[in-house]
Amino acid sequence: MNPTEQIKTELKEMLIHAKNELWISQKEHDFLLNEHPRIPSFYMLPKIHKNLENPPGRPIISGNESITEPASQFVDFFIKPFVSELPSFVQDTTQVLNKLNDIRNIGPGLLVTMDVEALYTNIDHTEGLEALTYYLDQRHSEDMPPSSFILQLAKWTLCNNVFLFQNQFFRQKKGTAMGACFAPNYSNLFMGLWEETYVYSDRNVYADKMMWWGRYIDDIILLWSGSESELLQFHSYLNKTNKSLKLSLDFSSSEINFLDIKISKSDNGDLHTSIFRKPTDRNTILRADSFHPSWLINNIPTGQFQRLRRICDTEEEFERNATVMGQSFTTRGYQQRTILKAYNKTKSLPREQLLVPKEKNQQRSDGVNFVTQFSDQANKIKKIITKNWDILKSDSVLREALPDTPTISFRRAPTLNDQLVQSHLPPQQQKTWLSTRKGNYKCGNCVHCDNMTNTNCFADVFTGRTFYINTFINCNTSFV
Image 1 (cartoon, rainbow, N blue to C red):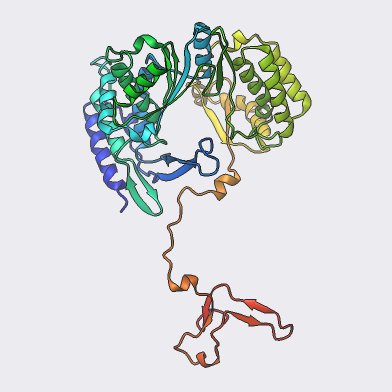
Image 2 (cartoon, one colour):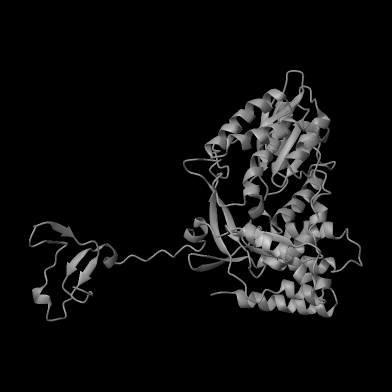
């Protein structure tokens, strides 16, 4: 039975109360209430980097346009600022590279990575909400909406993760859906409180051995100054702190991989970095003849070469990997002049410049954004709108609402994948004797039965060629 209407009723009661208390505006109320939600779908993504022949699955619940998705986005907006303030927070590869550049040398230390196994789906609701409470209590008491309402929405979202699988409805009782908007930051704060309690506190007797502890959601990097036996004891200690958490361990005195970085240590303890590619990686660069804007296609080589130069800390490593990357672009149909132009542009940039974090572009909120599906007429559409924009601006009413120049964006056109792949899997059909029985049979209840023969094949009267019947038919079948 579809529980969506019952869930919607609970949401309406919460929102009406919040609006009456002036916690949220009418606009926020309308945003949070999805009157026509889509039912989330469950599917699995194979982790081929774990095992190519028998890969484990990553459970995904596609919650786009679902009843809980607006609430998930709303909660995420208020908890996100706390994540970047966590001591272990790692935003991206660039931040890791800058941190390693600051440390430079770890002497005889060990390179360590850990992975929190199945983090999203193993967070107990009570413990996850305790973490949110801990951080939201740091807000000012007069901030709106109150933290109690944000927590109420978070709990409602977690407890109403309902999805459809093979025509049956299921409810997730533990953890958060990997497809939920607030899942990464919710998991980050859960881990943040765990770290504050067990990693950075006096409970950790190995704290003085940690030269750096960084974490990208469920991936942990650790530079360790202690011995191997002390590291194993520390790892055992961590795995005993919470029954919901299990950390895998990988360490080396010479080389280790974290995110897309291969981190190595020289004999004197100096740290070096290069690009890391998983053994299962394939050449998946967007083809040059793909149906995408030309500016996007032409900028891909530049972006990839700059990523390579950012990660590789020596000229030798950059040149070696750039040669491999150039061959990959050639295989995907890119012209040599495009590849060479991107390489030369990147080569002229000092690596230090590429390690400077980029500020995110602030989106214009004072104008009208024209959005349409990308097609081979996209450039013509853009020119027509830009050319005739003054006509709209000449209107006395529209003049105040429209910006001086239009903002034009294109969304992706449907692909073959969109049309051929379904999120909702059909239910398994129950097999009957009709499912396996093939051939022609008498129905046993008509005047034609005397003229029918029970057989699984028939022969052409002229050629004598035999044809086998691949389904079940009888006297009542059409055209028989």
